[in-house]
Each structure stands twice: as C-alpha cells, then as structure tokens.
Image (cartoon, rainbow, N blue to C red; front, side):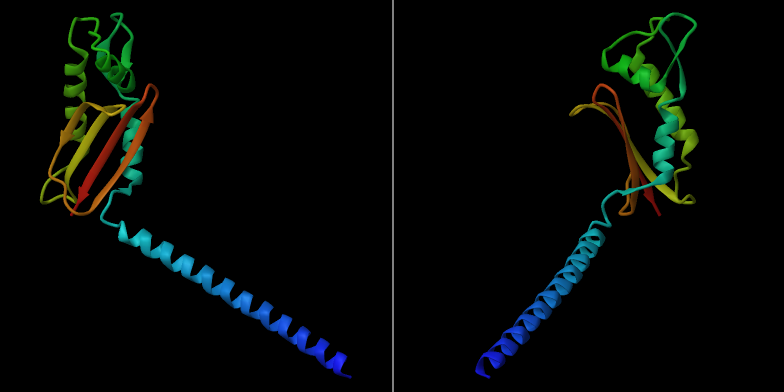
Length: 165
C-alpha cells in the first residue's frame, strides 16, 4: 500500500509541475507581446513608413529628365543621380548635378503642397551615396513624420520625410 500511495503522489506532483510550466509559458508569451507592443508605440515619434512617400519615390526614380548623354535618349532620374555622383556632364555640356537639383526642386514643389493650409507642413528629401550626401532639400519638419526610403544600385539611397500637421 505505501508503494501505491507514493506513485499517486509522484503522478500528482508531475501533473502540478506540468501545470506550473504551462502557466509560466503563457505568462511569458503575454509579457513578450505586451513588451513588443510597448516598444513599437514608444518609437511613434520616429519616421513612420508612408505608402504615399514610398509610391512617390518609386515614381520619382522613373521620371524622365532633360539630361541626355547622346542627344536623343533622355536619362531617367535614377540614371541622372548616378551621372551627378560621377560628375558627368549632360550631352549639352550642362552639369548633371545642376539638372538634378533643378529637376528635383521642380518635382517637389509641384508634388507636395506645403504650408499652413495643407496637411503637409514640410519635407526633407535626401539622396545619398553610401555615407556621403549627393543632394538634399530640407524644410521645417514637425513632430509627426511619415516617410520612405528607396535603395538604388551602386549604394544610392533616396530618403523622403514628410511632416504632417
């Protein structure tokens, strides 16, 4: 009889240990979820990915510019950025960086209505090659920022941040 009682106690102890492990596991998962949600919310002042900004950058790099290398085939913006990076002149001997700046300035001015009456109160567009900046356009940025980045070949990165009211 004492052997049967000992076996029942062991079995009961094993069931209690399994129950305790399950409770610890459920509590750990719940804490992990809460911590990850908290960390995600704490970064809300940082740049948030914006579909508008991302689609704008996708379209921007496909824009056909005034620069040509042979007199009849015009460069798209991503190609012009590469020409600017290497200080290559356009076919008409115009500086490719000047064409790039003028083109981006015109596109940004026509694409984003910036001002107090608008939802967008400022923007920042930066084109980088590795860690060095090729060109940038800065405006006043507020606390709510939406943005996107687009990587191009040859270590070129285009970054757009929009400040929302």
